[in-house]
Length: 301
Image: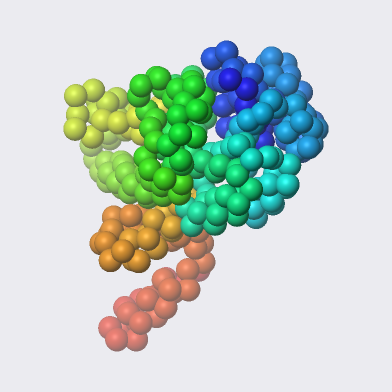
């Protein structure tokens, strides 16, 4: 099957490589010439513009976007909407907000262009391990694209599926990432407790390796945690600053809108926000309040 790929960053490039290995034809576009050249070296084709990309694909065309969520996705959809034709399909494999996905699908529908949202998990390991794909879109369109999803997934019959109509793929991936926040926070807190019990001098890497086999908390995330602890047991050189890319916020907002309690996800997001406050006014005010009502000492900077 022939596929156009827009966005050849690390994940997009790895997805293109996996498709090429699976016998598909991939033509890729990226604003930078270096990733286009790398795709050519891997056996794919490249285009130096969206117009050239669309022209290189046979109808009905399928174009997969792997670009950052938000304005860049909007501008890419807008550009492609004027280049694609009725019967073509545009796939968004990025972490778009599902509400934006619904809006974009409605924008393309009058032109007969199908929109498919493929929530994608697997990160930098997807090239070798395969990607978990949560696909939303018209049933017939997804069926036509099935060979692509089967190749990208860990196995043709595992790790992927059509979860519902357009928007549902990104919605499912959003909640997936919210769960991920909570899991990561629980592991981090648990290992922090172990690390602080200094009189036992625990080897955290050893503990992680023990837990990886037979334990009820074993998981791929624990495998990665064990790998990180093996490389850097004391986390030297790593700043205690944790980013978030938006999905946890969206999940929490959806929980509020649906009146669904999600305290673990909420607290894990708050912990990430807290990690970025190197000069916390709130903590200073707390210290001042304790001094006001109890005469407790204030530690000076």
